[in-house]
Image (cartoon, rainbow over all chains, first blue to last red; front, side, top):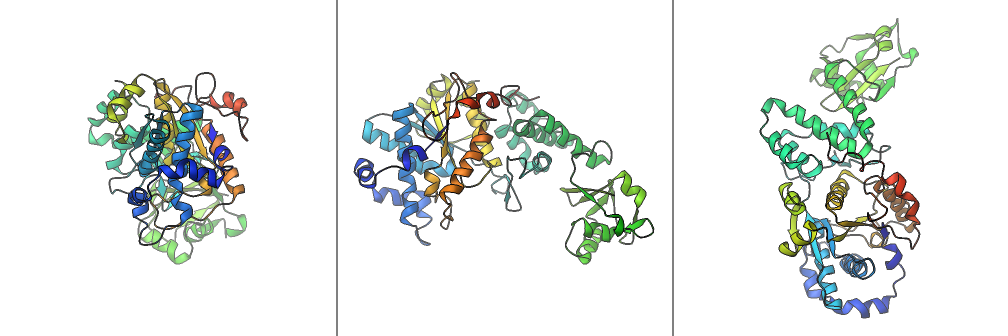
Length: 289
Length: 144
């Protein structure tokens, strides 16, 4: 592993300009996609130098590490070409570049984000369960693409899966979610996440990995609590009105059964055993005492 | 199926500079390649994950990965695909992020003899990381 801080931060400005500045045509640079987009709104000189820095990395790594190839996201294409050009001009050698397809969903939106937030690999920022659920809930149209691009399942097996009956779509999603969670968090965590996710759908099994909320005893009256009060307490939504709307829309399930009655009470006995609440498609909370 | 054909079959290839040369190079384990990761946050994301799996695929085909942590270029900020300038991060933030990236990456890419390159210069004295690095990927990267 290398860090370009080690060779970039101590560069001397004038030396740098003389060494590589002569190899870049500003006219060509301005034609690059990433800069073209900024012609209207403005482009700082700081950012304009990004391409030169990234090109310099390739030039440096070619010479000092023997790197003959660079890979990157497709939005990096012009920066990567900058590097191969620089190597050609300075050293008269060939170096190569390949960009990888950006992972987008069937609507063309970049994947790996939920409601604007990134899906992180750090288990403290995105738990293995949340990570699993993200992939478990991808759209039907995107499952096979994700399996192809992200898992290590052999191509022949993937091609077979393409022919599976439509009814096996959830099986495919489970495979995707399990494989990716295993790669990122290890097999044990993947197993736990899968068990917890399955428990949510069937209302049984091990739910130890589900986010949970303990209802304080003081919130109970006569050994029970109204469902709306409980959901509000557990942060399912911000106001009683909103929680009621969720119930009326049929967005709340309790142990796998849709809740329709906003006057429903939950007893202390139920809470002792643990009550699994599902909101919409993806949010799960276990309420306990 | 060789690695170039596999990458193609998986729909991973967007653009290449020289198709024939690259096919020859990576199919014969002749590439020593790098991918840069800008340290704009304190964790890698699902988006980086695809780049990490690509590194692993190429490594399994005998090519040599050099993961590049971009502690330097993040000081500038990549304008690609953005309509406005990024918030400038402090050197301390970037160093912290770089350290987080490094720890996470060690789980994905196998280091050590003939594997991925570790820089012995600069801040990182990365040579002690190989044991932890072997933990995940080296077991069953082919899945179920």
